[in-house]
Picture (cartoon, rainbow, N blue to C red):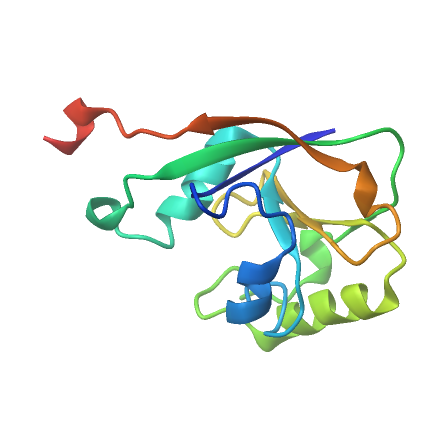
Length: 152
């Protein structure tokens, strides 16, 4: 399976989940490393744009295509099992608890969650502490440049 993430050049090859560990995220509390990825490159870009003002986007963003090789364990969170406000900002604490529980149980490599930006698409959280993590490899990295015509 291929998944995607967007990050600054100095962090794009880091699959440790350090950023999420330091800052926390929608699906993880601070001190819990997790790698946030998206089902396609467009969703990865969209997820970045909702967190950063378009005019303030760094000019050193890169897009990584990540391959999860072979069969791997996965858990899916279905929208119907989430609270009505699951995709609000700030996000409900329940989501962090779901992610924390998943990480602590350490049963699956991947947690498939609906995107809060487009609930018809999915993000894939990857647990760097899982025994199957060696199956996670970067297959390619591309510079991400906003078309100059869009910024004028």
